[in-house]
Length: 365
View: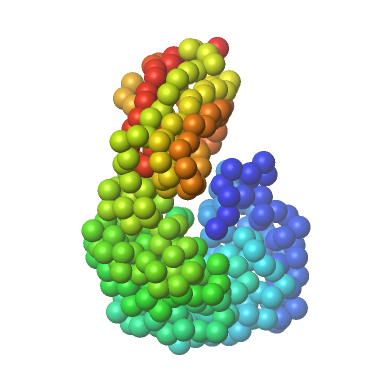
């Protein structure tokens, strides 16, 4: 839902001004709430070392220490305060339900619905799925027919088998097919916000039960424009793997006339921190639907290699084709990828089929 690689660390959404404002709002709505005590509980010595979820949980626990002991009363206060905050920082409100609400079903379900429109309650539902999966899935099926797009998205996002940042739900990883009735209700949803969640949910399933996922998307394809978008986005991992069934579903065939000619690197060796530039010519003798990608076999820390696929473009030709492509790939270290010296391999992939490869060396400075 949020980009991980930003200049400002995500944990900084919980800054001093936010904590002060949150404490002031809670004090307005809760008799006896002590803002100073709340701030002292939040800003303990280890605060600067805490990452996003650690800071969020610290704020949640500090609110709990200062709010009324009665859960229903505390939730009433939080629902009055929550509309003053939106986005990532507002995750503290559904987090309160995640931590303290499992024993208060009716109040918690209503609070989850309320809070999800302000940020998202996708993480808050995970303990409920672990403790009461069948009951929670029934509730999420109801949510999938709600008029509010945020609540419909929650129905799909909350029960994703591999939800990023979310608590693991082992039963969903073992059998992700149990969420299909929810996805069926959402497969033609008009909201792109919901469509993305359904697609991501199906993409999760493709990593666990690819045959079931492929059977589902093949059955859905052609239902509606919205469904077709979901199916295509959900298939992105299998497309990158060159799965033959998925390639055929979208019309990406292996025509023998397709050739990659003159694959060349601008430089045979690069240093970490530089960019590697390459060019090649794509030749085909008839009209085709084409998906053009390149892969890099990256050297890992222990000397093994791991391939990463990058999409260049996809298009359909009306006639024969002879087109040159030029691309650059950065070897700048990032939080999501660290580079190591050694021999790497660049491969050009057309419609899921490797067509040409070349080795190059990556060196330290």
